[in-house]
Image (cartoon, rainbow, N blue to C red; front, side, top):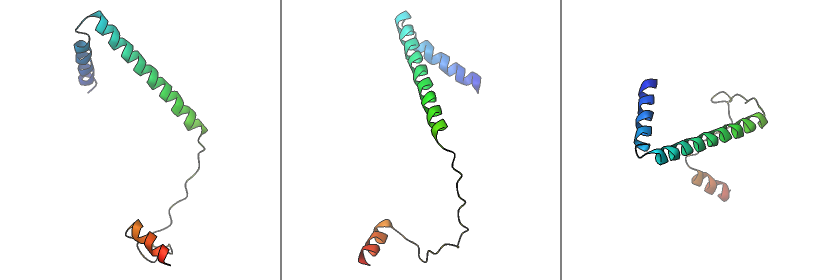
Length: 85
């Protein structure tokens, strides 16, 4: 799997750099910019993850133990039913 992926990347880079050093430099610049974006996104995600509190989730109630007596088919029907009452 890794070798197949590596071969695909090598073929793509070969096609992109076929036109000489100028194209090679552009590919390198684009890859460096992508790497910088990925680094910045990783840092932003880490900051958000560290700031987010870890709140335990309450378990769902057992099925059938709720006080719902009917099934709502659509939100529109439920809204109109509530407006009429």
